[in-house]
Amino acid sequence: MTVTDFIGYFAAFVSTASFVPQVWKTLKTRDTASISLVMYSMFVVGVSGWLVWGLLAQQWPAVAANTVTVLLAAVVFGLKLHAVVVKKEKV
Image (cartoon, rainbow, N blue to C red; front, side, top):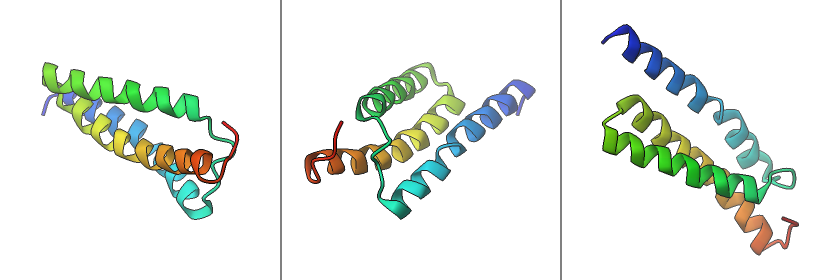
């Protein structure tokens, strides 16, 4: 592994891991009132775009990070969407 690869994987790990506390808190409390549905929608689309780009460009740190980030963000997005649709929470 080159230094460049290491830096890429390290940055991918740290930025992806930064979502874990939010997901954990949201799962634990089920409170999504302060989370913006529009922001999370845009974020999930953006990260999905980076994932596709990483696959096409064979940039494996980007693929690894964005795969995990999409999954983590999808959890919070799903809880927020449920709160808006089912619980009639404000967007």
